[in-house]
Image 1 (cartoon, rainbow, N blue to C red):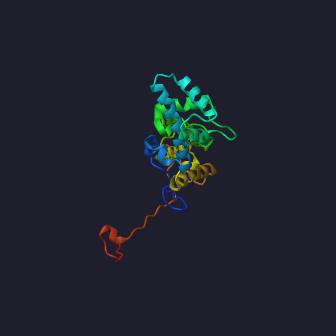
Image 2: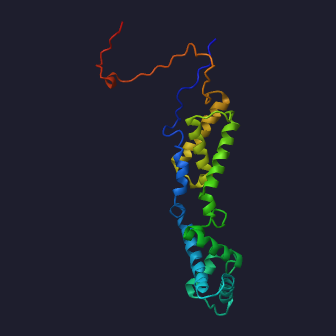
Image 3: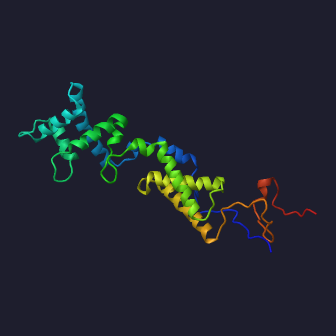
Length: 244
């Protein structure tokens, strides 16, 4: 009895890319968080920058950062408010609900992040915290995402010893999904992730085989793969001719 034939071609039901190239994951480091942020997030970052610049202005005049933050908070609580109107407005805009201003520790954290990554570091994430862009975009985050993707592939019954280009592309697609998060991905990238997981599930169900045959596997018998194409593609006419 011949060995079970492997699926020779896997095509997503909706067409398009099955998985993304490995380079797409590495290209994550070149992506621009500011460009990808929402208008609301950009506005919040801009308001935070106003406060940070007010602190840094005092620091340039010789005041320590801690004293500068304390002084700005003190002026904000004064009656009347002793801050420039645009700074006072930024204090209200960036404060949590029912508060008049951000906390001292929060402003200090903004200053530290701003010195490292500029305005993009002040973008709020989806939980309202400052995005740690250096770690998020760095090689450590990419390595972790790729390791997690390898674990996912292993969980679907593909041994760690299997290394194919298709497996590498599936892993890259899953890693990209982890790095960005579903809410940040474009539709083609989300579809590619769904297709990659679909391929792994099909392998686990036995509907396809993503493990390449070893040299010792028996030769497939009784299965014929036929590829049909237009005769003109090979410089032939439309007339069928038997070759004896």
